Image (cartoon, rainbow, N blue to C red):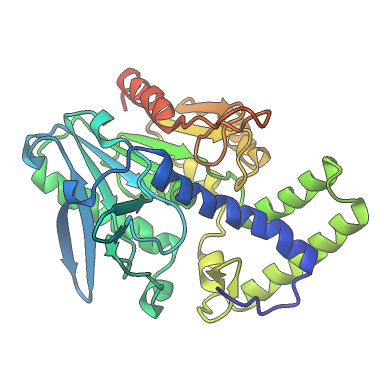
Length: 346
């Protein structure tokens, strides 16, 4: 747990914690609401660079050199191992941050995930705590560099793949947007549950949304906005600080992920599939709308923009009454996405 080191207003902290809690709950639900994949199904690969090592993991129903497509998943924020395994004499429980049902992935694709710097792929009977190494390398450009190197490495193993697809979710959407401007081998981009604006502005939108829905009054909304802008000013005054935290992230992380994703998306000329749920608890849908309007304004024709009514940040339905159970729609969105890939050649 991190202590907030600013003059952040207590009311503002509560609003922001709702967003962070929504993301953490989303990870927790993934671990237990789906057919959790086994870490043993993935093969470990490493790329050695000067003073650095990139670790990535491949799931494939065939040998990697026999596959004809590459599918990269870029997950969201935080220092979470992709598998957390708890074992005792009688039971084994697994929590995973990989939301896909592996057996439903296309058989001719290699499915790729990349470990964040200094974060283990799997932990067994231990609690992971982020290291200084993780915080020092937690940035948009570093994650883009990792995936760019992985794509280039995979191209040595899979000759002339028919498609190289990257899906970025949550913070990963910022990564995939910029990756699309860097790596010219990509053929399709999935931008899921991501903001078009700066992440900074999303917090302001959340406050105004609470005010418009009468959850808070205008006086309190103004106080929250003042508190937010005071905090953002402090972050930008210390843009590389890894010892100051806000909302469980370092100042450096907030600064490094502050550029609006729409600016990078507009530079991409391959097909782009944007997906957002109307009940997203981490990204206000209002922030996503700018993507569609900017593509229209710039006369760009490579965008498919999907709004999913009543889906949350992880594409689960949000029940309208207590008797309903949420439905996990992640693989349904993925199925629609892969049909789109077949119909949209780069």
